[in-house]
Image 1 (cartoon, rainbow, N blue to C red):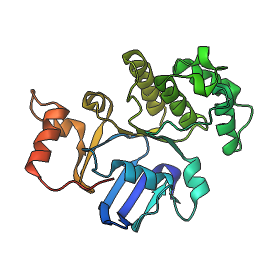
Image 2: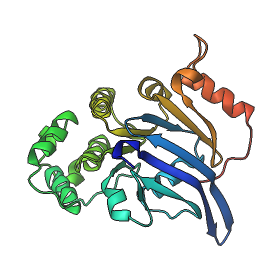
Image 3: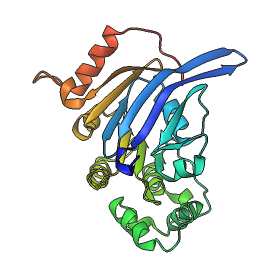
Length: 254
């Protein structure tokens, strides 16, 4: 199979049930998706729909109860190193070592992937993410918005062909949102596959060529964005709310 014929992300019949002392929660139920190389996907859904659980499974942080996931042909469970190398994930949580500077943080992240001598790329990331003036600042001195910028830089430092952005602009000012999306668009135009989760539906509408809607751990819709917006007055928000009303069900907890 040629590299270009491989799916960027191949999710086959993935389910996840969390079992605890107080019972169990079905976070995902038989989810199957194929995302092709170069696509810009919006993964949307209400809180508790299963988005974060699915991203954690893609990242290898959570094992599925059933099914399999591959990143560019690399099974996340059987070949975790190569799967992780092909993937860059911007998580929701702001987790950092507070004792390093921004530049040191990015160089350490590079080292996890066996990279050195990539200072020019780190400088480019710092520039595009508005972090040049903070390159030598300690991580604990940064605001929440600045820390989120560093999360994005960390995810991109090894130039992954597949990029997953989990609420990357939450708590970020409008100016950075615009510069971040311009940069991500450019990476997508260069061939990077992008999966985005966001509660800013106008972002998904303007950026994503395809939208996947999850509810209660199942795929409710998977269509090109243009196909969802059939009427001139439609927005992704109105379509999103209409679909949720038409398919009422109890929402599981992530």
